Length: 222
Image 1 (cartoon, rainbow, N blue to C red):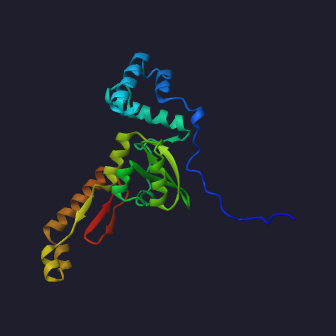
Image 2: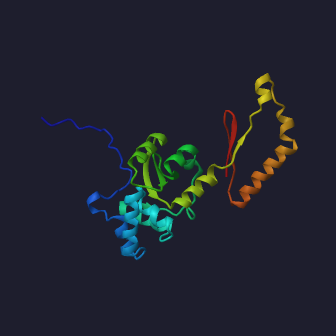
Image 3: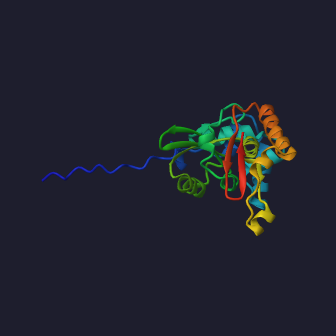
């Protein structure tokens, strides 16, 4: 008797990663490309033994290699895409999927949708399996990883999330009073605030501003 066919969906891989057996060590790749000398690699490996820091952190900290070079080689090492966050346009709808605290904790930023249920996420460390699993849970979508330079990723996070405006009113909260919103809208501080937001958006060449009311604050994304 033939077995009944099933239509259960198969889980999508996060990205086409290379197996451990085929990966060259990062230090070897750096020497191969002439970014490090053999002597510098030996020094970095010794520092890694002493401090437990990663090779990439050490060589960038010593000024031997740029963060972008490390990101490109990590992408090659793990068979994933390298992404330059200074050149790519980040989709607000994708970035908005991940709250700021998670973006900073995971050193990750959703960049764009690849399909309805898959999002491309830039990370600084593609070796962190825990981060990959947590991202899938936090986003509720399939995740495809790309590697970005740490300075560019942190700058993008800062740019996307930095404009958070508190609108708490302790007196109104304690007394249960209703604020005069019409008066607030035409007051000098409100006008100055809007002007400042527009000026900052123009400086960053933003196409639009998104105002997201929260329980005790207003989140503004450029």
